Image 1 (tube, rainbow, N blue to C red):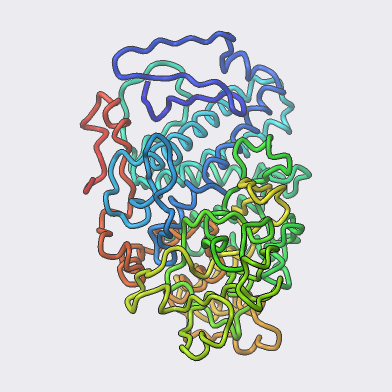
Image 2 (tube, rainbow, N blue to C red; image 1 turned 90 degrees about the vertical axis):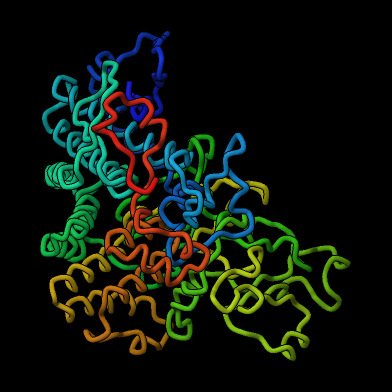
Length: 546
């Protein structure tokens, strides 16, 4: 059996069959098979529900942030970026800097390759057995739409990450030892075929939050069309989502990130994590990844309100400088620069510092010696944190992303969060529309969509200062705007890949990764275990450069 299909779930988190290169011995103590499980409406519903669980392997997870945000122009590694993984395997630094990115990277293999193919195989099982499952005709149509959407969703992640990949439209039910990498164009044709059916089959609304809906499917189809250079189709679908439904931008960007306001008018689709953490099979940990080491600073200790500092990822100086925070409220809504004294033991606070006083300031601006000496609190200014070329000086203390904070955790030692992980939201659809309009040569229309986003982001009274004209619109401006709006939301690597800007912008704006990234890094390496397991070596070759 191809090892990229070695996890073959038939419901939710069902049992696995394992392969080895020499001899396959299968043991199935329950006697469960796809044929038996999918012969009832309940079984087929469980199969469709199971398709959603695979997003939890990377959305809201350290692995997903490493694969989808790092190694770009806006993030670099903080001090503890290598302190993760299992069995002594630390996969993050190569994903962040490209130095030493090999065919054995465990997160490329286990999180992107294996989980996406496992989800696809489950979708293929659902689609095969759905007609004979006993579900009503109406429900069959809806379930087929969901299964086809999810198959397209996971194939998008694969083809953008790896280029040509095996295109499998039937479930794997027997031992197979051969594989062929299907060209990108053919994979995308299938993705678009599946999505075109999905948007005619999936209901417009749902009472089951987290389930895909028609507008969410249309938003994703807009992104797929944009990726394939079908700009008018992308524009049409983006405009339909913006104008054709009840979704609205929230009045305040900060409101998007309030833990009490997660299910709001802007969210098209999210991975919904339960407040009962035992149900999550691994909850959202994004709130820990971007925090600096505040708890060792004078006047500070770790607490629930300030978060659990894993010190994994820090912003590039380029990202911080993209914001004019005098006009743009997204900087303060996205980042935390000031930490207030929370140490109750007065002997552990600097003399004269009271509870609630400023304890630490991190800033992207230089601070004079006189100013520093006049304050009781600790200051980390731009020159403390970054060298002149943007390379970090201090990877422990920096302006920290705050948009994923969860002050509702049970204790300060709780690393898991019930916060939902947004996958598609209306703010991004406006940006997709702007990009499509630019590519169609309609800069006025592109500026309109950008101004909708920028006006919402304005500080009070600064709406006019945030507005742009058609002359301001370029692809780089849109990418800058996407960084300001979507930083940390697990889209950046794909954004730069789609726009053919990955290598250029990493070299220009990320000094850690810029000296190592090569042209071939626009795709990930095929996991070596997959290459080794296939007997048709001539049809299943490694990506160039690896």
